[in-house]
Every structure is written in structure tokens, then in C-alpha cells.
Image 1 (cartoon, rainbow, N blue to C red):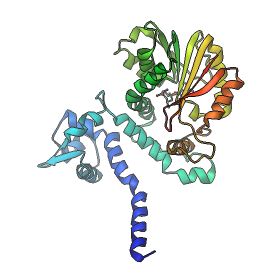
Image 2 (cartoon, rainbow, N blue to C red):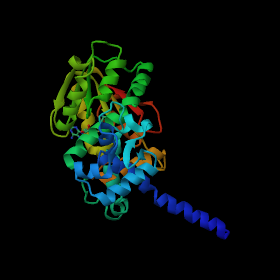
Image 3 (cartoon, rainbow, N blue to C red):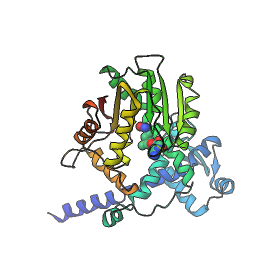
Image 4 (cartoon, protein in one colour):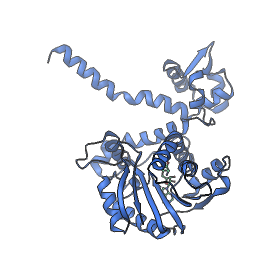
Length: 339
Ligand SMILES: C[S@@+](CC[C@H](N)C(=O)[O-])C[C@H]1O[C@@H](n2cnc3c(N)ncnc32)[C@H](O)[C@@H]1O
């Protein structure tokens, strides 16, 4: 290798190592809610922001400068404004916002920063909660799921419909968060009178109630607040939707989840599992390998499953015809089985 080639390899690696810096600038802007504040009151200065929100001037000066340099803000005569292009995406209160997802990414990043610790010691590093506190991180997580699912859920529901797999009368959305998939599945379902029940922790149910009340599905959705590892499942449903859940737990918990789903279903019912699945060699697809790390740095037992293993577990608890109905290299793969 020439000296020049070596230099460019070194630069490349240092650039990869510094990749977190741009991310952190944007994420800190969201965690401190700089964008919504400047959208509500355009033209605030550094001193205004410090006085109103008790921020520290020295780091805020550099943060605002970086947000300008990266193109998210503009500055005129010492006054800051959010660039038009980013307003609806970065305003926490906008229906098209991804700010909760960016805040959740901040929380992920606090885990990822200790990836080596996790590999060395076999457990997530002690978690350092973010500036908004644990409760707000819980809400951000639920709303981040909505940020991702808002555009994906109708696509996934549409694909299930195309394959004749959406004809339920009563849906159980296990770990349904704020109900984004419930809405999409009800919307695409063949039966216009079908109902749904969202089963989630209190934080998820609070957001689901709020979001669902603004939709035409408000009187077709019930809410069940609890812990699906402890509390009994609602019964007499004919579709159990387990979306982005099994990766947070080990095989025993997943098998029990399938058994409980089987018991909850009517004789003709169906279960569907949406997730990202890893190949047998555990070296792809990329989304699966990285998601495995995401689970390793934040959970004790989370994992990415091979689709064949999920299919086998479904068979072991009595489901028929378990199959990868929607293959995909990302979190939009869906396995389906019938009772
Ligand atoms: C990764 S999110 C998936 C949300 C949604 N199903 C989706 O696909 O967008 C996991 C959801 O499961 C919920 N959850 C996790 N553990 C739970 C438990 N023990 N009992 C009830 N809900 C739980 C979380 O609150 C969260 O809403």
C-alpha cells in the first residue's frame, strides 16, 4: 500500500469513528427540544434560550452553532430559526414529526456507546438516563414506534390484505404501543365492523387512548393495560398481532407468548409475527445483525430469531401451517400461522 493509500484508509476509519458526532448534535437538539421551542417562538437568541430554559450558555452556543453548520437552523443577527424544510419533522408536536424517534435514538446511543462493555461482560452496561428522565424516555419510546410505523404499517397491512390474510373480526394487538398497527390493520381489514384490543403497559395505553380518540376507529378499539408476561391475555379473538415484540425476549418467553396467543384465539384464529429475522450463519441481513446488537446493549435476553426457529416454535405449541408469509430483509417480515 502506498503512503497515500494508507493515509486515506486512516482518514476513512477516523471518519467512521467520528460518526456519532453529527448524530449527537441533532439528537441533543431534539432532547432539549430546541426545534419546537424555536418553532413556537422564532428568532430567540442564545441569551433568550438560556434565560427561558435555564440552559448553560457555553455548550448551548456551540450546539446552536453546530445545528446551524449542519443546516437544521439558520441564524440572522444573533436570532435562530428552524430551517423550513425540517420544521414539521423536528417539531415534537407535529403529526409528521420524527423527533420522538430521534430522542429514542439518543437513548439507544447511550446503550450503544457501551457495546464493547456488553461483549466483554455479557450484559448491558449500567444505563445512564437522558436529560428528560426515565418517564419521558418511556413516552418517547412509544411515540418513536409510532414515528416508524406511521408510514410502514399501512404498507405491511396492505401486503397482508393482498395475500388474503386480513379477515379478522377481533384483533389482539400484543404490545400495540400507541395503536399504529391496530389502526392500519382495521383500515385494511376485509370486515369493516371488526374491533381491536390493544394490550400494552400503562405508558403505551395512555398514548394509544390519546391517538385513537382522534381517529374514526375510536369506538372500535378497547384498551388493556397490563404486563403480558404476567397478566392473562384477553380471550375470544381471531387475530393475534405480535409486532416487534419477540426480539426483546428469549425463546422460553416467546414460546409462552405463542401458547398464550393460541389459548386466546378462537378455533379458526390466526397469529402473525412481524419482526426482522437473521440468517442461519448470523451474518445477514444487515438490519438483523445490527438489531441483534441493539438488543444486546439494552436487554438481558433480547435476540434476533431465525425465521425457521419461530416457525418451529409455533408448530410446537400447536399452530398449523406456520410460514414466512411476507419475507423481507428488515423489520417488515411477517410469519403467519393458523390455530
Ligand atoms: C418495540 S415496541 C413495538 C410496538 C408495536 N407493536 C409496533 O410494532 O410498532 C414494543 C411494545 O411492547 C410493549 N411491551 C413491552 N413489554 C411489555 C410487557 N411486558 N407488557 C405489555 N407490553 C409490553 C412496549 O410498551 C411497546 O409498546
